[in-house]
Image: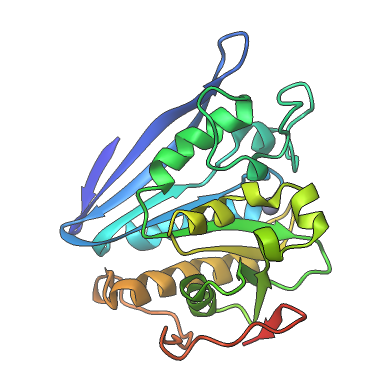
Length: 268
Ligand SMILES: [Zn+2]
């Protein structure tokens, strides 16, 4: 499907991520918004964990903001990164579908000859690896404030996290600096961690909690992404075509770096 509105082009493509043993295809929709002018590529995805519905809603509403906007660069958006968990409204897949890697966010960058989740991640990684910035939308538990997670010490990811605009930015240690639990739980296979290893700044917004659409969290997500796009190009989206702009303060990259603190929790 192709629709040309305003100055950018939108395509929605059905991508086969993997096939189940019966031959049933696991498909998802990849939205690509391409501006007339060159600029950065932003990769967005949601619902790796299928019960985390706020992220999918963020990308649904984001569509209305950018489909007829005048883009500089390109936005690739995957509202349902893991259809298996989304359709089961579950955090991970039923064990029978991928007993080796039931959590998709532990296998990046995937393996096209691997388990179901490894194959699915490999297909999505072929899109994500094209990006200059990756934002992987998640939600947390009911007692969790909306926040952004970024790799400790990675200045560009931390800067992106600050620009996103949540009041809290959580930094996570990785690899040799990380805890035994980090290794035991295979956190090195998170999309965000893999992206940084490949030189792509990446953040994980955690937009409140699961299983229901929360207006404040969705608004935070939409505004955060638009602000990140604005900051990347200073004019990636020409807001004059939309008639409004979010009221968040944009924090400059140059002034954003702070030394990590031992608690890894920074109040911005
Ligand atoms: Zn999640």
